[in-house]
Each structure stands twice: as C-alpha cells, then as structure tokens.
Amino acid sequence: MIWVNNILWIGTAEGIKEANGELGQQFPLKDLGAAHFFLGMRIIRKPHERKIILLQDQYIDTILKRFGFENSYPVSTPMEPRSQLFIPDQNEAPEDDTLFRSILGSVIYLMLCTRPDLAYAVGACSKYRAKPTATHMKAVQRVLRYISKRRNYALPFGPFNNQAQPIPRVLSDADWASDRETRKSTGAHVCTLSDHKSNSPHTAVTWSSKQQSTVALSSTEAEYMALTQACKEALWVKRFAREIANISGVAKITSPITIFADNQGSMALAKNPEFHSRTKHISIQQHFICEKVEQDEVHLEYLPTGDMLADLLTKALPRDKVERFRNQMGVYEI
Image (cartoon, rainbow, N blue to C red; front, side):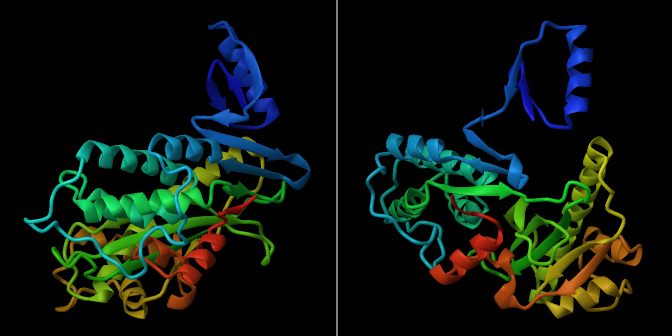
C-alpha cells in the first residue's frame, strides 16, 4: 500500500512497481512511500504481526471540537437502549436542520469508514434530517457523546496467514416491523474476515443497516428479505476476494460462503424454493437466495439470537451487548 500522486495503491510490491512503471511512461510520478494517513483515516502498520489498523481519532477530535462536544459527558451506547425515534409532534418546536445535518453527515463518514457500531443510530437519525426536533437533535448529539469516550477505537485487519485466503462470513438479521409509523422492518448484515484458525479474531469489512422497502407480514419474511441482501453482499465479497487472490497469489476461496441467521423459518424458506400460498406474495427478487443456496454459492447456518452480532445494526441495544458485539466486529481500543 503506497501513495502515488495522491492515489492510494494496494497490492504486492511487484504489482505496485509494475503499475508505477506503466504510469511513469505516461505521467510524471512522485513516489510518496507507504500511506500513513488517507481521507481522515490514520493507517498504523505492524508488519511483524501482519496487521494494518485503521483509526480516525484525529477526525473524531475535529468534529467534536467543531460542534462543541470535546468535553461532553460520555455515554456507553450510541442510542438510548430500546429507544425509538418518531415523527415529531406538531407542537414540538423544530431545531436547526442545518446543524442537524452537519452533525449527521460528519458521523456518517465515521460510520462508513471504521465504525460499524454507529450504523443503526445513524440510520435512525437520518429519517428526520428534513425537520428535526429537540428529540432528534438530542439523539444525534448522543452519538457525539458516545464517540467522545471512544476516540481511540480502531478497526484492525489481521493477523492473516500469508499463504491462505482469509475466511469471510456474513451475519444477517432483521428487526420486524420496528418502525411504528410505517411498520417497515430494519434489515442488516455484516461481513467479517478471519484467519483459518478457529480462535483468530474477526474484523468487519462491510456492513449495512437499512429500513426495508416493503412491509413484511411476518418476522420470517423480514428475515428472509434480509438474507437476500446478505447473499448479494456475500457473493460480491467472494468475487472481490478472488481478485485479491489473483494479485497476491494466495489460494482462492472455493467453498461456499457461510451466512449466519437467527430465524429458522427464513432459513427453511431459503432452502425450499417451492412457492406456496404463504409466500407467493413475496417479491420475486427476494427468492434470489433460494437459487444461490441450490447452486451451493452460499451456505446457511443457524446462530442463536444472543450471539447474532448483526443485531447491533438493527436496534438500540443495552451496554453489555453493544460492547460484546462491537468487540466481535473487531472494533476495539488500541
């Protein structure tokens, strides 16, 4: 990983050298060496441990100072446990929507880069960005108070075996009819990487928390729709891993990617592609996962709800679960 003319290149030393040679024939180049800072992310290298750590402590300090929260009282969860946001009451005075969107936009970038633990809170607050009230402003400010206590929390990658492809696994979850206004569900998935060793740490590489586009008539349907999105992500990760394998020379992933779910009904439906009266109303695109299970592209495995770390991306959880699931995603203090 090096900088060349403000472009971040990732690959083997030989590949980077070859790319430099080809580009140098067309453009004047200046090799800036190994990247240590990129778009607000600090890159810490530990070559002897085969690890790279992404950290946004300086970015957090900047946004906390910008919004006057550098000395705020910290909290342990990004949202009040088991809380939900609602459409504002007509009698409730509106807040500064420009300030609200500025805070939200700053936190969104942090969530997208290194902090999957903020995904649900960001999504919940984003629905009220047009006309926020004091309740919504308090919610987005709580996120600032949460990250103020965790400036040094980072996302590490590794250690990985140099000769083996890291193993991806995808976890899928949904919170049925969680929006009390529209009764739409929140679907989420997270993909983690780990070494082949069973006790190796897992690191989140992709994550998503979104309100589903249609109303699910049951928890099975909501989880089934979430599984479809998780399946798409799993296939993309597998293709991307193959491209990395071609560059690095490590072994390619040949086995199906495992998707973990905590709803037995949705897993049974995905494994049984037959249409019947209870499922024929489900959109055809949602049955995409049935085809991929049948083709052995993905493998479904049950994981109890208490161990489903994707649950962190579907609802406001209490402190003990936030801390446990955050650590299992690989986000911890350095």
